[in-house]
Image (tube, rainbow, N blue to C red; front, side, top):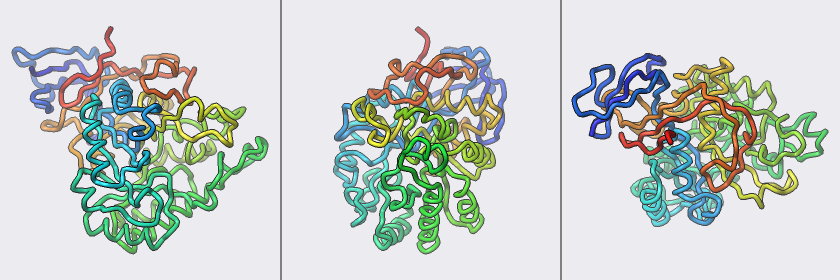
Length: 424
């Protein structure tokens, strides 16, 4: 049956426009925009709420295999659907790592069986994510890998990295780097500054990020590989990114929603839910990152969803595990940027849906006739207080617990099928 959504505030990240119109879904695709309702179609009145392309979340950690108690494909899929995320791009930092076609085929099958939303996988760039020997990139591409990364395990052997970049370039594969100088950032918990000194916590200078990106860009220049920096969080890193783009290198960059909406002072009295990698930055850095997303210098916003159980977070700050869940909080946190005037809704969905889909060569992320009907209907103004125990993720480590937020998902569609409905 076709579905006709009327009276919707359509967010178009390609044209960067908002228009009140209707949209017809038929056969899993967007069949028409602005036309009359066909006979027999199921009609949904959006009541003036926002209809946008479903979020493509690039960089989600799921516990299968190895840490299913932290997050499963089923729980991640349910959380994503409730958060307006229609495509998860899963990281390979599992146990064991996703570094062989056999493991990749296993997680792909499990995800397809268990999740209500689409889950695609990145594969490890080096075996075991140990930085000593590159993986079988060609075979992993054939098995469905959409990109290659060692996630937060930064390769210290530049010769191995150069070989992997060169081979990836020959196959047209996308490599995702984590720009950090590993020696400087090892053991750090917060960003270097007065606050870190007052709290007596091990810190890292933001230049560690700049140094890591400089090395990777030099290798991009040598090899010509397609490269994406998973998180650029410091103003000191932006000039290097800008030069790389100006020089015509195939380079893009992302940032997590936590680094766009929180700063180093949120750590407060050693609150470990605010311990993430890289650590939260200064307010000046945060504002510079918002401007960089608005200008398009930073291309992608993601959740960097990293579930951790209570035992690994209920520790002294220095010893606690890094990471925060974000599949359900990505959209309401992004609405903070909208309500503060930092980014428009089309600019937000350009970074959360259109750009990640384009970077990965996916047809999603658009509201255009013929595009997949992966859509989210949401109210950007609906207020609520975040309760971490209401999250659908198995792990509840959100830094937004107890905070007043705005933005609720009303319905989520994947291939035209409703996978989440907030109505009772």
